[in-house]
Image (cartoon, rainbow, N blue to C red; front, side):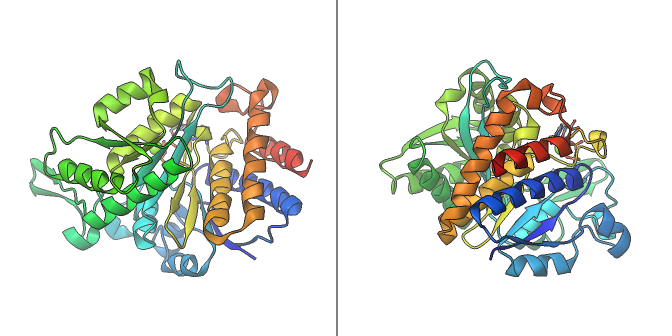
Length: 354
Ligand code: ATP
Ligand code: MG
């Protein structure tokens, strides 16, 4: 009986989480998954009640659960970190060592915003890079030596680069057998040069997978011009974060962009977008991003825990999403359709129940 912890988060988080649970319960009824859920508050609510956006009790619960459904967390109105406003996504990924942020983008029929369809996965390293590393830099990777100078540091380790590259090549083996390594080694000779050498080292162990290399700025251009060049992209944390917003927007919109944060023992479903405070509480958010993330969590259960029913449920959810989005009458507001968050979740659940 897989036990998931559910962290609805801020902004549109509670609405898209509700819709996602509605869909999961329908999938559960059909495929007999036996899922159970524990709910915990995080984000602005616990900042007010407990003085932190990420209570220690949530991290404890995550250590013994079988999966996490993580809603978006607001970053806009945070007080400084010493007042408890930690970046929940980053702290959760680093704290649980969820080093692979898997970010697919696939154009749904009739919804692409680029001039060519795309079908790719960005494998994002999620524990280091330009993101502040508390352990190494004692508080933050950013500082101001004088009031007029700001400095940011970036850490890459062999351990982290090798393991994310391995996940990319493994994934490519069950896709179109091509990995594109994204880098800026022409300018960041030490860090990106090191990154590229690590990826090449892993590539040598996967002779059946083609290694392609591209400079990050060219990658942004080629994503628009010729996205069919890409199958699996592997990139360091910051580059992948930017490119995945571009890829998901080209595929149809941020509201469609699911992702997981995962390692070999735990998987966390999390939409690629943020808390979208501009549309929060209005039943306008597209829940597909979190629903597809939850489907990826079920796929993880098939792959890592041999749970075939979870894999079948994931495929049924994807098919039902495709079917609803193919019809303009059952699209959400962000895609020009009439459906609110709740109605879309209900329609999807009804379709799954058949
Ligand atoms: P945060 O600070 O939490 O990242 P943000 O203002 O950057 O919030 P995002 O969630 O990153 O907002 O998304 C940017 C914009 O894209 C939002 O303002 C919203 O209009 C739109 N958007 C994002 N997610 C969705 C969604 N699921 N459904 C519909 N629109 C969305
Ligand atoms: Mg944002």
